[in-house]
Length: 357
Image (cartoon, rainbow, N blue to C red; front, side, top):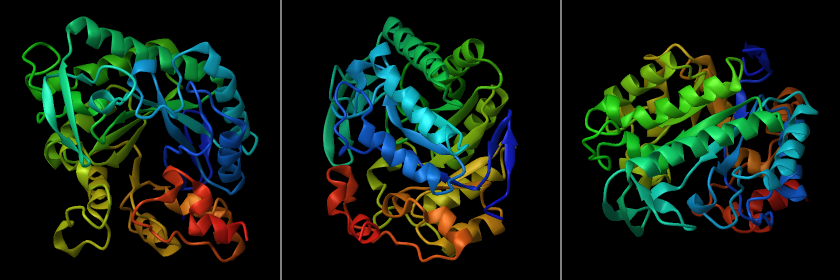
């Protein structure tokens, strides 16, 4: 089941297990430029049999970063690193998407960007942001489109729009944050306008065969609203729906503090959300969140809870996770540390240490 071959717009995905986008801050990235060490990180996962890579969030603007160490895709100086990263994946015939990102309210490199005035706590930190002008919104839309054009020129098979986890695009989708009364707010159609504008621009500039994935919360603010958004994005050309959590639940990304799923569902609520969304859209759905054991991933695929399963920490600990299934070799398991040590120094990760002996 996990080895099923899927062809989407001429791109062949040879496994139902994908590499989830995971920002890593331990590889010496400066000015958004990808390093050789980071390229080797992705190459190891491509060699390990993964079906597709969704590369870590690349910021579309210098003043919209989540961290000073975040990769960027806002200027030409950064393109050689992206070309080398794509080449490393394609060497093993693994498609790769660039996840396009702007931190929005949570930016550390410029003025926080929000559709409406905001003051509140996100993931344990307090943030304040002023309402954006329409000209500022149009500028950000263009930055996303231009970033996609750069991604295509670098050889990426497509892009993923990060519309979850309280970042820029998520804030426009969220009625909790977006209180605008112009064309970029109001009802649900208005709140989707920025994402739809960007999708239209990417399709026009990058062509029909360029893949577009959308990472979307299933709870924006509820399942039915999110399903309506997903259906609209699908009609606009979305090729994958990558299900996660929206603005309201971003403070509870840790499975141990996250809201429980209903009806004793054996996985966390993000996986439950993916299963629900799969019943409401026709395009392939990617489930992500806490899948660290082979039997967990197999169960989700066999029960058709999702079309693809994205692996996160599991691949950080063992880049050969997928190929070891085929070979019958023992997999190094993620210990599910309360704070993932990869965020600052991967050498401290107990799984990494075990894998490297």
